[in-house]
Length: 294
Image (cartoon, rainbow, N blue to C red):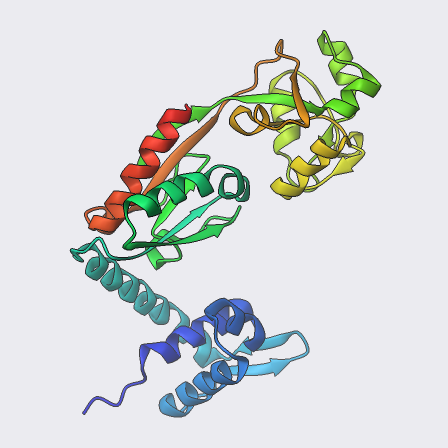
């Protein structure tokens, strides 16, 4: 009988190797810390090697543990590929689809779309992951991703759905106090809500020939939803998708003399999953909904 360690133990080992602590690895794998610790102990006992040493900065790989990381990564890739192949051959519309999108899209655009889908396909369960980070589709962190850039990850299929127009908005109360700009000079004299560590806004302004520093924005935030609510509260003006801004009664679109680059919307899924009936159904539904917005 094969007594080699279970893949679950290697998965826990990789999580600790990548995060440097039991607590962080447990959070990443949605396990309890004692369970994670037991996995590491069981794997070390089965292999008869010491995998980690404890330091003031966390857990550090031993030479034996470091040598195990590359083949363990290969095991993880193989396990992910097998799971994708199996899921790709499922033939039912029943089951779960895990979808990830930016926090703003998840908050403002997807709820109605997903409600319509649930009415049409009650057997499909949706797990929505609002995230501004890039989930790995090949490791089933998500089945489908909506991206605002063209994905370059290998072994995925992508569809460009539309380009969402972007405009500049200000709270009506803010504009009543400071005026509605009629030219570029008046626009640039107004306070902008800026990003904190993200340099996207600085780069966009540079494309328009305007040089600004982070410190020029007196209110700054990288969280998309909080940023938008700062604009709505009158902390300054800011840019957003017109499909969101035009429907907000607190806001007014301004400076139509400025042309901002649109926001592309890409729909992507692993190649191995695109023939799965429920994945295909959600892909087609989202494609139709977003193309109607473009």
